[in-house]
Structures are given as C-alpha cells and as structure tokens.
Length: 240
Image (cartoon, rainbow, N blue to C red; front, side, top):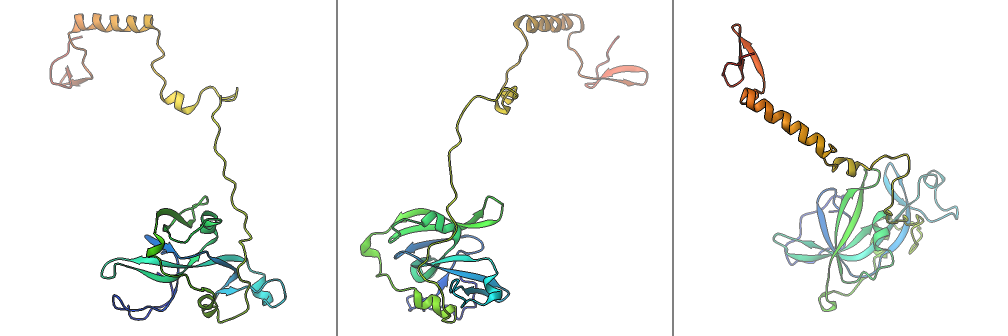
C-alpha cells in the first residue's frame, strides 16, 4: 500500500519488516489499531515530505516557508487477503482529515475501513468508518512507532507527539422551518403539486370530450394529408 518501492513479497507466515502504510489511492483498506497515534509536522517540497523541527531556527528557511502539514503515525495492522489471510503489522499514517474522525477516541482494537472519498471541495480526502472491534485476546502488544518514522525521515530533528494545528470543522444540523415571504413555494411542493383545476372546470372539460366522442367516434391523434385525402396515422380516412 505504501508508495515507496517494495522488495519481493514475503511468503505467507513469514515475518515482515515494519513499514509505514497509508490509504490506497483506489479501493479500501481494513486497519486494526493497536494503540494511539503520534503527530508531527512536515513540509512538502520537490523531493517529498521533510520533518519540521519547529520555529527554533533549525528548519531550513526555504522549507519552513512552505505550508505546514500535520501527520499522525499509529501502531496498527492491516488485513491481507488472498493467500495471506492475516493481519500484517505496520505503522499507519493518519492524515489531517482522518484525524478529525479519530481524535479523542480509544483506538486499540478498533477496526476501520479506510478509503478516499470526495471532500467538500471535490478533492479526495482520506476518511474512515468504524466496522468492528477486536477482543483484547486477539491483539498483539503495541510497539513504539518513533524509530520507524525517524528512519524514513533520515533521523532529522522533528517535533513529536504534537496535536494537529487545524481545528476540527464545526458541523451543525439544518433546521426545518417556513419559507421566507419572498419565496412563493418550495421546489418539493411545486414538484408534488396536484392539478389545480376546480371541480367545475374539470367537469366541463370532461363533458366537451364526451360530446366530441359522440360526433366523431374517436378523436384522431394527428391528421396527415395523403394524395388529396385526409388520413389519420392509423390509416383510416378522416372526414371534415
């Protein structure tokens, strides 16, 4: 799942080196958390992500001017299907958007379906849905994720175990109410509106149709002139 280049796939049942995994570009991943995640700040440049040590002057000026991005890293397992059928240990990357969903929750043992969904601006965002909770007896002990994160960043200075700097989005429910005076009717009302004819007008129209049937039998849908004679679309001649 990670974007970095992989070596040969390990055999089923063989031990694996802990890798940092992230949400796939397409499809879904089932992730089981073994403990809480730890956050750090990064900057993105042409070479990828670099850690930000903070405003202490240790961050290169060119990199520090770039937008600060928060990332979290959690001890976790992801499910491998097919010939594996197991939960593979990893460090799972938590994005700023996923943090809004997971923040404050007790994660150990919870299983999440993680995928990319269209955000408010249409751009895909990593999201998660809680789908199960595993029993403690089925979980391996948690492990320290810092050495694995420090390794991919070249053991450069970084802030560690910091909260996201982006406040969560405020979400409120809409309130039902009457339309304002300048709105004549709601779209749903107009779409569901019944025939507005009065009973008298409806009766008059029906009487006219009945009278027409008595005189002409069946009113033709359309009359087309053919060779000087008027014919209906069903081939019967119409007389004027």
